[in-house]
Image (cartoon, rainbow, N blue to C red):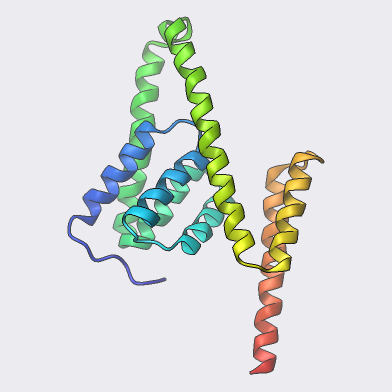
Length: 193
């Protein structure tokens, strides 16, 4: 693991960032990932773009909620175990509060015309953020300029969109293929050294 960030008030910044992103984001893990990337890569520059893509891959591969997995990994990467715990709390607390309030007033929310319109409007915003995240991730794969990565990307898109293959199977297959390719490259480097 790379060196942790040494910055005053890092725990407060981790908590408030994750709390605000989690409180103001609708649309699931990829939407939150896009906002975490903007904050930690582009604004704070605590994590590189390539490392963020690795963290996203790990978070997607792990069981559980992707947004929480991502926050924990980012917290651990930047501030160790305490950072992981703080980002976990900051990410989980807003939905827990919001869902508690909604569950107390479920009938009123369910039948409210204004709330229904608000949710429809949010869907358009979520779609835009998901498209942005997809484009960013594709750019990173294509930037790598490895034929193997581009073939895996194309095969995964084809399998998901046209063949209806389960996403979990695609992630497992790509992970195994990437692991085999990395292992083969490591053996090749050992042989040439």
